[in-house]
Length: 310
Image 1 (cartoon, rainbow, N blue to C red):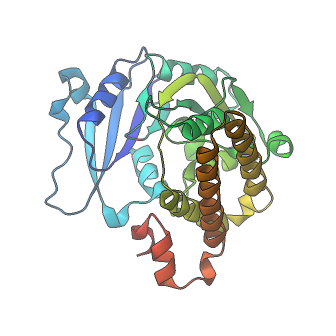
Image 2: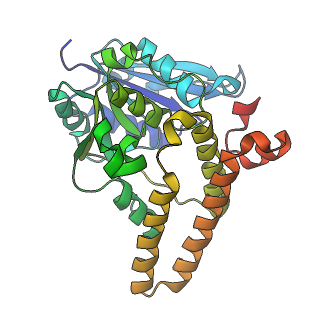
């Protein structure tokens, strides 16, 4: 079973583009042993993803598992998928992350040649139609250089020491299980919380720039607000991790770089819009960090994960 990989993907209303994503995953130089699809459903009558839309070989390694919408949780749902995994490694992906080439799994696996690496996550490239701000965000969070991060890097990297993304991240399954796996109740950040746990236990997290997936979003100001609210909530709930490392300092540094670059390029309207986005993000984040002081109706108006609060 050496170097075997299972894949876990939470899905919700997956369309034809998702079939293409799966086919690219199946064509990897290192093919998955099994793909577990965790489908969020809104009613018992909802049809499950039809794996027969896929090529015959791919369909044979797919299984679809329904999750009631009221039961979906960023940590618990993925933990359920990890329980089913039988291979040495488990790769978590999202349904909108598309492999850039045929070597994503192989390149992530290579990081585990270092026995201290417990997690390896991929580089995210912006989609062709992504705007300039989104492209800069991807370049900032996912640079061209790989890095292996340990607990010792916290002072130098701040919050980025624990940055990790389950958009495309591979875990050494025995280490994951030994450390208790994902937290079972979290609105956001299950990947960073797990990265923190692994580093505290003496393991490292590898960012693998050669493992590339296409994944980006162009969020509106409102979408930035609700995402940042949930981010603030998760950091408040797991304050023992996040209180000692500032997210705001990292965010301010990034915002400054983007503003300078946009102004140098004469993008004044784009600069103004980006500054508006930053304001919405900061306001949402601050509210999320103080969610316990807010009335329930206000929390439900601010969150993007309303089911979490029921």
